[in-house]
Amino acid sequence: MTNIKDYDNNITPNWCPGCGHFSIQRALQVVASRLEIPNEKMMVVSGIGCSGRISGYMNTYSFHGIHGRSLPIAQGIKASNKDLTVIAAGGDGDGFAIGLSHTLHAIRRNMNVTYIVLNNQIYGLTKGHTSPLSEVGFQTKSTPTGSLENPIRPGIVALSNGITFLGQGFSAYQEQLIDTIVKAVQHDGFSLVNVFSPCVTYNKINTYQWFREHLVKLDEDEGYNPQDYQMAMNKLIETDGLCTGIIYQNEGTPSLLEQLQPKDASALSKMDLQLSKDHFNSIINQYR
Image 1 (cartoon, helix red, strand yellow):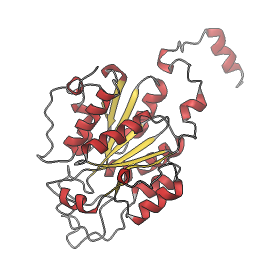
Image 2: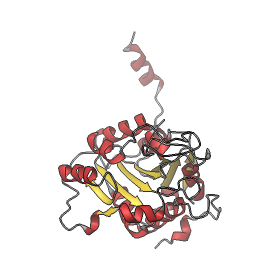
Image 3: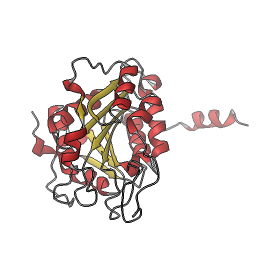
Image 4: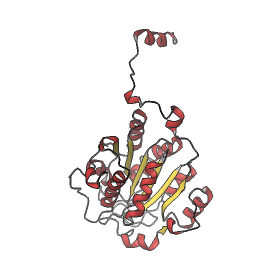
């Protein structure tokens, strides 16, 4: 039985005291412990910004990528070694600004990767300006009279593009967040977990108290069915995206890896990929 401390590398995070990212890091460690994932079988890939630091705080394999590119890296790693549990992490800028196209194509590709978005609705590392998820009227140093742009709705975007697992969490709802991520990791396909993670330094609107007053817990709604696509879309519209738990799960769509190779096939990283000279020449001759 593994322990949460097995996934702690003893590096003290330098996030601001009170940042919601601490809870997400702990949630990932608890998830790894509950699923008993060996340290050497887990890979955490992150992008840039405050969220990008999370890969360096896990006692697992990790890759600190560039802004908006955690998903291409994570998918490449999973494709080459399907035996790894691959977690991609990034902020709302990573996932829905410079990395938006990667998010959309990862959804439609349905690769077996879990994507955690650390959503604080602001760019914190660059000292506070609007992100694609900031609301109209949101005031920052770069928008002193308020943002004029409509925010992206991650859940609706994901559902409309064919997501097979969509969950949302809140840093302060630790047990629900852990349960959602556990199910996301166990899902055979691409899973997106959008986590509301308050920035206590630069976002004075979307605070812990604000989320407690506005969020709806779907697991407390006895009539809610996460297998019902239309119900999921209606709930996102009804709550303006402010709901937590498992929003939608479709287990009937085969993952990309399942379509590419049998489940009992060896990981690409374990195959002998060397070509004999005769085999190489036979391939070349086809194009002459």
